[in-house]
Length: 158
Image (cartoon, rainbow, N blue to C red; front, side, top):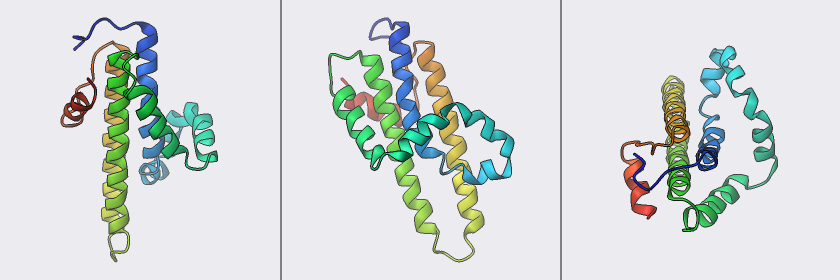
């Protein structure tokens, strides 16, 4: 849906960049899957420099989160398309934080290793699917409609 106007190539590129935040944060959930299938690690080689910088700065996640929210989402001078996708990436990151809390809550339970691995793999695969879908739609100049998340984004971004 491109009801807010046409999008330029520059807008499409800038709108797809915020999805790096949930991707980098979500790689922790993929550790089990990437250890079982080492060939999948090749897919993530292009973002290794970004991950190194991100992990090298203390509180980088919090700083990037607030910077994106305050400087992009709340700035009405920036195109709606970019603000929408930035807010959607932020909400995906919030969902990851909540999933991380659930996984940590299950950790002390004896014998829950299989459940934790299955849950982490499911979260990781779902996240990758959401990011690939969102970036593909963004590159095509369309709004990525993820159920529940996109509705919350529309309420936040005017």
